[in-house]
Image (cartoon, rainbow, N blue to C red; front, side, top):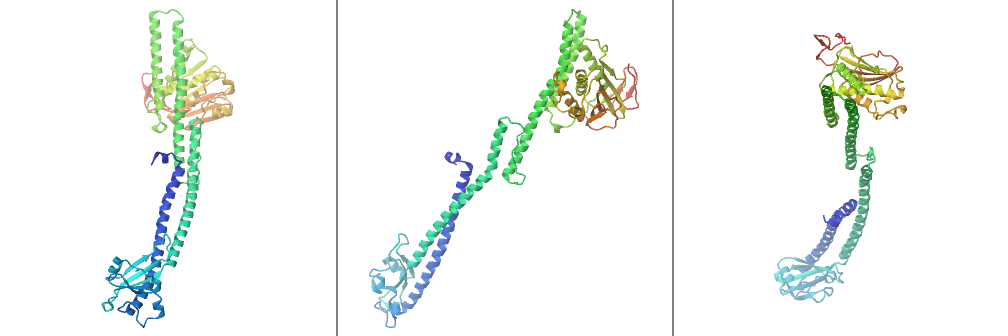
Length: 502
């Protein structure tokens, strides 16, 4: 395709190609019709000439005239009798004085019949004839060839009229088909133009725009629109997952970085001995190791697609993670571990759950931080096994809790109560907890004043807390043995094993 044609609109190129094809079809059809009519008219003339020749040939005498038995009708026919050299021996007055055949055709007619048209169809001739020459018998010598002719006026007129009608009909058909083709092409490509306009809106950054695809059609353009919508949904999901990863990473890294900063500030707040500095450095190294594991976990979670599977097969001690989180927050306030009355931990039973330690630390840390930030002290964190194969963490506080509407929407991203908007945070903690617990096959419950909201897999455990604000996490326990801090024997993690911790 030439560059000039390539710059034309697609519908114009489609109509041009369709019109060119239609023109060829019309020319072929018109040529076929013209050939059939021409053949039929010529055959009629040939039959008439053959009849005339058969009637006059026996009447030709040796001198080229017609015998006495010829009728007046015979003598009024258009005919000529030629000798061997093609000269006229005799003929009718209507045949003229010039031979109807040239010498070459006359010599050929001595061997076999010859048909010739005299006068062209275009330009129009005044006396168009169709001649038919046959050889005469040797007994009629020197007469050698009989040429009969008939006028072609009606035949030529019919052919000219046919050409005109075919031209008009072909032009009208070409015009109509081109117009209809243009309308059809424009109608077929209208969704494409609409898709282009909507794609331009998407390129400008307008969110949640989808191509308007008709549900009543199932042609190629409609299927293209559905495929593009599927692609747009996949792209938007991917972008949203990237944004979620950035938000979750910033949210989850904020607490350990804050604790690490506080530890360093406390270490610098007064002169310390070398041994004390070494102790602080060991604690900082422990915090950095946890921070490194958290960053690796966030990276894996950010690159994992939803279809890649659920949480891995790792497990962790729920009671230990809760105690460690409480100690970290006590250090962050500058109080000795266990000395702060604002957070009370009850973890008398070793509970190993099917959740990676990094993820479990995320869950516990978010719940403790939310209780400390949005509730009122004292905050109580209780770990136990309420049923076979289920580990439970309950976090409650003395705050005003959540109203029923907020309970139902608290796990959605960026959901915050009006009074908490002036406090630090982004409304991501509970959404991260709900997602992690749901992936592990557990259940998250938000309860306050007789209202209960459940997220994840419902587990057969009843709530046994008071009317205050309580967040409960139920997780499947692992099958490995756990060792109590004050016991020498391993205890299987089920509902029959009880180990008391002070």
